[in-house]
Image 1 (cartoon, rainbow, N blue to C red):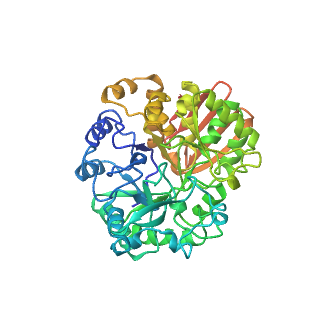
Image 2 (image 1 turned 90 degrees about the horizontal axis):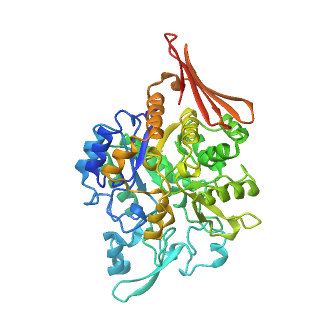
Image 3 (image 1 turned 90 degrees about the vertical axis):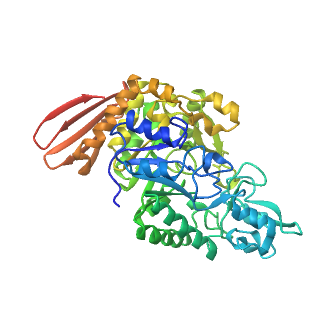
Length: 489
């Protein structure tokens, strides 16, 4: 299947009305013709934590959300993207529970990456761990397995608890390869068109490396998954938070990538009223990207923006966002912090709140996103111009919940009437229905505060002019019949 050059929605299965049935109703009633590019449904599977990212299985849908029939029904109208956490699965899964019960006698024992596969005696060395790009204090958890309650250490890249809820796969094991094939076949059988490979950058564990994006091994793995997906007519989107050079390399290997540089760059552009960095980036970025401003995590800072902004510049923007209500996630490994200790991994916030609830600034941000080459994705909170949900953070103790508000049907009814949301809907319709976006792109500027992005296809064109001083977004377009229109979004 070919990915459509149209706008996509990103949402949790329960964030727009509480379940998949209501999600479909909301899509049909309130978001008519908005998401011709499809819908990315964040993990709808039974899960033991991390808001779905610690799945127990990929063969069932969490019963509180619905079932596979709901997915198929939505898929009959929209191309569906779904997540596959290729790096890990829940410790509550039948696979790992069987391993805990039977130890090395379990038929699933080889599915998991026990530390004796990395260190000969199974005892990790801190000199090796110090080189790694860590997502928790230590990259492993200890469990008691089998009748003798043997202490076994298992690799766990992610997870706040100890032991972690997310257990890493041994991707080289035969049983993993068989499971991967079954999962992708099940996705195909349920009309899934796109699969996001979550946490794929962490699948290779190799001593004397960062254990993050280890080349060429990671490409060997990716190509093996792509071969299966291609046979099943499924498109892949690897999710990799990394320095932009790695993203560019992934793009050159023929994969779709995420534009994780854009969220920070647009925010910086609008807060500081200066288009210089955005202009330079727009001229030199790959086109085969999914663009985004907000998501279920946060605005990437390190390592994504390394070498693109100075530490001083990053500190200033981060401080502004914190003043506007954001919270932060941090880099664990000292080796991967800046020399002066700057360690911000992501800014966690509502994008609308980071622009101080300024409707014009927010529409300018979305207009820039939609006019850059790539497939635009709009996160459901951003779609409804949602603000920071600090109460949810206090209730859950999870900083990322600041941008994960669950909208009731009544809240959606109210939100879609807001002027800024109606303006965004109009902008999405324009992006979906203007043929010039399938043409040639160029970008230029005549001052530090203004930028112009233009698409031309034959006799038709569309041009966006953004002034960051007053946050005006003016679009001029002309179709093949020379019908000209000027729109102030």
